[in-house]
Image (cartoon, rainbow, N blue to C red):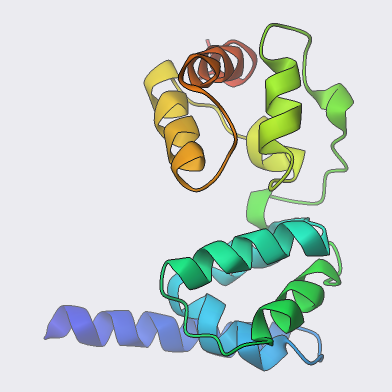
Length: 167
């Protein structure tokens, strides 16, 4: 009972913060009613994605149970793609380009598979062990990233070599 009350309080505070922070627009209330129920507001607004990439994410969330009516996915996707860059999801705006990815076996796979849905900052700012990168890449494949079994290992090894824990 106490846990349910705590969760309700956290969601309410998050929604209030989001209500005050999000710019007006046709998708604002939909984001508040659906996205912020499960996701941290700062993580959502800190991502830089195209409308097509947001649409892919929103479609995935619908598949996972997000309660949206027909036509609302497009409204949310367009709204999120037009949000001003805050960089809140990763500590500040950083205009990463493919140049942020070091050369190495797996770089092309990261560009073709990961960057389709993620801003490069999502990858570049993380520091994970090999097993953590494997888990992340496996999860992304489960969610729709187009990688084969051997490519998963290549990507995980590239990511730990390039963005592993500090030594």
